[in-house]
Amino acid sequence: MKIALYARDIEPRWRDRLSLIINNLAINNTELIYHSGFWKKLKEEYKIIIPEGSVFTNAEDLPEGTDLLLCLGGDGTLLESLPLVKKRAIPVTGVNFGRLGFLTGADLGPGTGWINDFLNKNYFVEKRMLFQVEGDFLESDFYPFALNEVAIQRRDPLMVAVNVKVDGRELPTYWSDGLVIASPTGSTAYSLSIGGPIMFPGVKAMIIAPIAPHNLNIRPLVVPETSEIELSVVAKVSPAILSLDNRSVTIPNGAVLKIRKAGYELNYIAFKENQFINGLREKLLWGEDKRNL
Image (cartoon, rainbow, N blue to C red; front, side, top):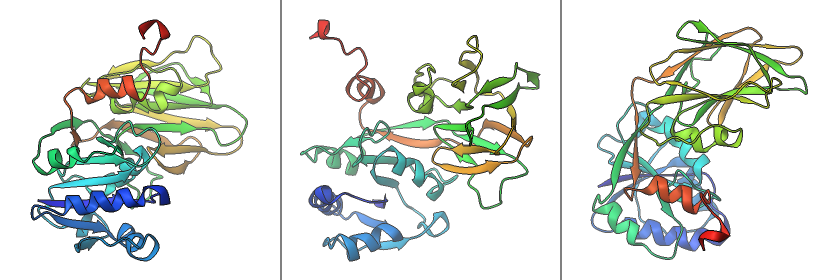
């Protein structure tokens, strides 16, 4: 099995655990492929003795035949890794070295049972919807896909006006601090914090949720995943910010942006069949009530 490893930064307190995980992964003739930035940190900064392996820098030099990509970090690390697989059907999962880790498949607990499940392919591969974004202002090297959400956000204290069309049908203007277009996967992220609904990952829908709307009668809206959403933003002073997961660019005033379901999906690894429900209970404290104790 070929396993690609990606990480941004690991706190010193977790580095012994990191070494244990990497060395356990290397058993049973597993071939490890290290992201170049992570490889450099392991060797020069962390001073960890690790199994030898090849090194890659981007999606173009990630070796053919790679079986999966394992991200070591939090949800942000997993989201940042998506341009490394692009349209290739390489499954992705993570080990939570961060805080919440809702997307990561394995927690940083004392046991290593999940590693055996990993190596024996005792897991589930879920298809997760991705967004594709189009806009004339986007640079050619900007990765125009997102797993969680596409967000428009104000850049100064003044609200912005976001004009929205869904399949050519115009909605009332959103006067707000911005707007979030969320996937089912992203329904537990930014969208949830601004009052959007929680959706099961397999639901075929998108969420349109305003950020701090000026109109009290504006509420989150759920539309089919087949919809094409067209946005244009008018800001009075500074141009607004367009964010795709954890990547952002400035969106010119009045520029048109189109958002639709991408032509391919992310293969996401879940170690348990009810991992999503467990995440709601354990990480988002779903239903936490002293009367249930």
